[in-house]
Image (cartoon, rainbow, N blue to C red):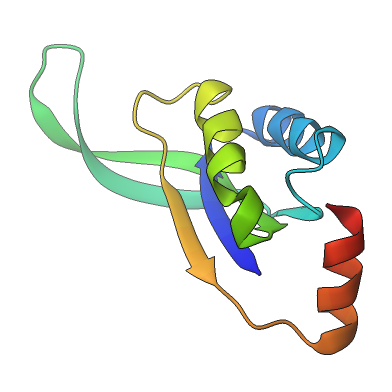
Length: 105
């Protein structure tokens, strides 16, 4: 199992991409977490790099390694960020969840 950690600018965009991933059977389950505060360096409107603070939501996509590449492509193509963060973590689910995940994809 692969867990993809993805940050979105808002819940609506996260939900839209989550629904697409489920409809295309690229993810078995997606958790969208409440807004978090993010801090990072990013160029301002004048191109000067500054420390930026923004409210974002985190989505956790549960999938299989065989679907990971296609899922990352779908997320990237439908994400509004110029440089979206997609972090992939291999996971070892419990047996029952692993079986359920397999039947969903």
